[in-house]
Image 1 (spheres, helix red, strand yellow):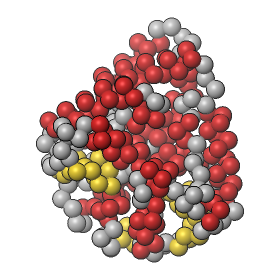
Image 2 (cartoon, helix red, strand yellow):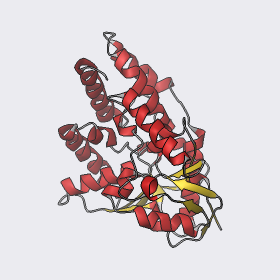
Image 3 (tube, one colour):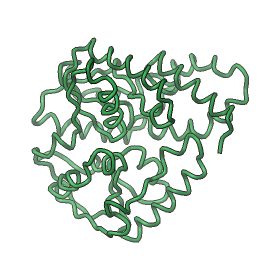
Image 4 (cartoon, one colour):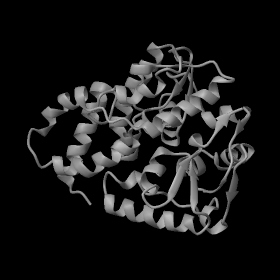
Length: 299
């Protein structure tokens, strides 16, 4: 577990990067929006697809979880962040494929745009590290950005971004009149196809906090996927966290939770289906895992 000085270093730099560039880490911003190249999505509009940079940064976040506590021991290391923002472009092609699949399915029935280089990170990490006052400050900045682009309806694609926007709307209900929907709510009326047998790992946020456990399973099954269940492992009250949100503070404990969860899932089926980039990042070292959006296609 990291010490107080390391935590303060992480907290200070997270807020600095977010307030400067709308990203939690010092990376080139193209990392977040290049997935959309060639899809001919219109720029902006009242309805947008919003990735919150979650899929694109999930694997990178694990790397920063490992190195940030060490970097805190070197004085003046923060000044190198301006160099990283220009030259550091770690592209996650798997996440790009997932986002392109989601956008392609949505395009069959929804008119939406994308903010491209103006798309901000959601602020999830501030919320999950308990930095509530900093989160509130960043949320005001997000609202101003969305309002400046005339956004009225936001389609989210991952549970952490969706829950974060849900909390922002709770905090600022009087000043932010926007509809927030998840892509599962949109594609439930779209014919999509897939195949295969999996055990499903529920996202804690979708299942416990947003009440979407059953509706997501309905979409998965209607696509043609068979889900294996074990009430003691995949039940509503018994399903466990992947350990991901704990990683910035205690990576060893996070990894132990992930290993235990993966071993439990493997007793039900050897292939795991999930719908969260952070669950994938934490569980995939220990089990064969797939995101729902990488095994589907529109008909």
